[in-house]
Amino acid sequence: MRVLVIANRVDPEPGHVGDALVARGAVLDPVWREDPDAWPDPADVGLVLSLGSDWSVYWDHVGPQVDREAAYLRAAVGAGVPVLGLCFGGQLLAHALGGRVEPAPRPEIGWFAVESDRPDVLPPGPYAQWHVDRFVPPDDAVELARSPVGSQAFALGSAVGLQFHPEATPEMLHRWVSQGAAELAARGVDGPAIVHEARSRAAEARDRAVVIVEAFLAGLLAP
Image (cartoon, rainbow, N blue to C red; front, top):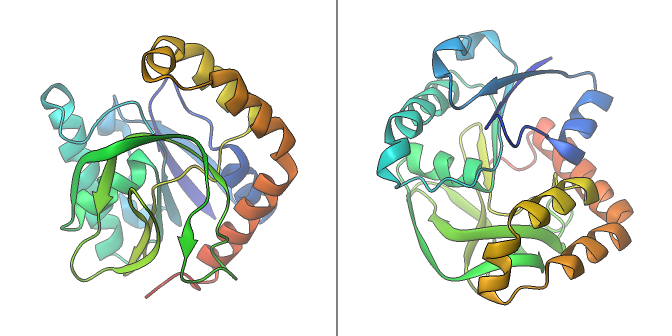
């Protein structure tokens, strides 16, 4: 199965989710948000994985790239191609399918549990999170999970959007914390504690990602 992985050039790793897909026979094909003209026809891929980003869907200066990816995700869902969106990818998926993205009432940066309606296939966590926006799922979507800040997961057709980061490995979080040190300090967030928790939870985080990937591939997260 060919999996198209949409990412920013500076943050390309699919982490635990990518590892779980490869272990189940997937071939990962990375493409860049900054170069949408190079993307294949969505009908030629078996699955689309849209990763996180430090962008916001509503930023004017990335509007053309956001519009192109939104159109691509809509086309993939319209063709019945499974689409999995993670954090920004989930926000963009909600935006593409008729929901909306807005500033969250407060950031979620660190490790947070979610309230899951399907804990057998969407474990309640805790998960790594790093976002200041939130998605509001499309009206015809099924919400699968939430936190006090907002929706955490939805399903619509062949698409599933997640607000959290099941893919995040300790190495990825160490890089995010290093690159975002000024932001974390301004928000009063303990970056080293996030990395320490990532290392202590690495095995369980990997296992939760496997559960989500298997459920998604089997269609068990579908409405």
